[in-house]
Length: 284
Image 1: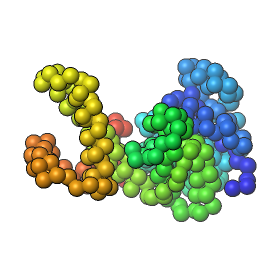
Image 2: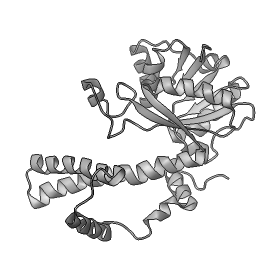
Image 3: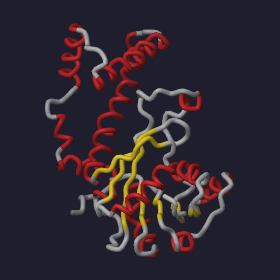
């Protein structure tokens, strides 16, 4: 886009607020940084960024980024969104609050949700900086998945410009619905992938502490085989051996519930989001 944008980052001193602000600070757009917490204000100023009051920051903003925790999005959006101009893009970083209809409603603005995919485990990293950047947003390229419900192409393009800057370096932005994004995060990547990652660490420690295998040997065996398991399972790089298939079937029987795919039912999505957002029910 050739248009110079005005961007307001609400929660600029938080964990994700600092990450996106680090990237936006290097852009040619006008960026205002808003932070209420004392520790966050200190982090922002120590990073060389000037703080602005929320009312001033959002008054002329083309894009307002609500970089606050999911559980805070309802009250923060209720405070901020009434102050923005008609046509403003209001960008949140997670789909939970949007899916649960917790965001302040205005018909004359555009809500967008954008969540980073983080650098792929299969990314061909070329520098030490890329190797060190496992989270993304610093040196290692990543994809982003985003949602806009209105289908407004102009606002989508405007949002994508900001998304590519705040999560840079970005390979591609994939556009889905809010509900689809909610099934990606949390269901696919937190309920399943992150849980399995933590389970792998538990299994590693059990191998070390109960069986007595030296930790360097157990860690080396696990790290290498995790890559093989992902390459074979997700990309089909090589077939699993016959003996491995038998062991995998044994593992499924011992570890996996028969009805595990029910997590992709809407009622289960509502259930996990209620727990994450501390809600009694999901608003529909």
